[in-house]
Length: 192
Image 1 (cartoon, rainbow, N blue to C red):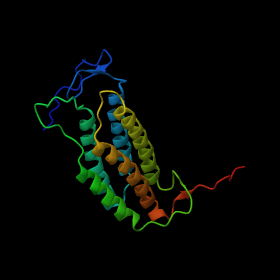
Image 2: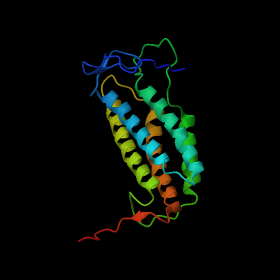
Image 3: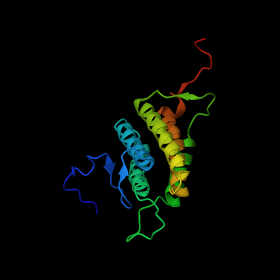
Image 4: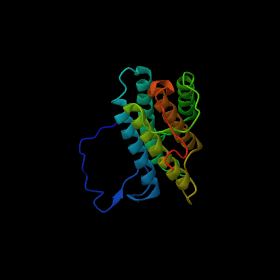
């Protein structure tokens, strides 16, 4: 169980932060940027959930995702150093990827077929979900860059999860837009 008694420690006043394992890192370190962006996506999902009136199934899926994102943050904050840790680190696992794929399939089954790209907008929940999707894509880009950095490891399951999450958020936004009926569609060249 996590127990937080003191919120400020002053240990980050020098521009560094502590990871779950390994030496302190600068706050603009790529790994810190990656899990910080996951935290940002989680916050955007939290705002979207404020607009889920009449969508209890979607809200429940998003609650599960918010918990997963804390798991993903812990995964990223516990770098694989090649040395066995004193305890089993929390990692994203395939069953979390499978659950999100199943949720995508459930939501997508009732959607209007797409005839154009979708612009972020429509219902307030949909707009917030699109914002969360773009933040998730940024987190994914950071994680990919991190995984290609010398000495850094990002698990395949973590990369799959964040990729599926952006897909989920796209489908969830369409679901929140009256199952696609209220989607705002891109009209190519409309303002020429």
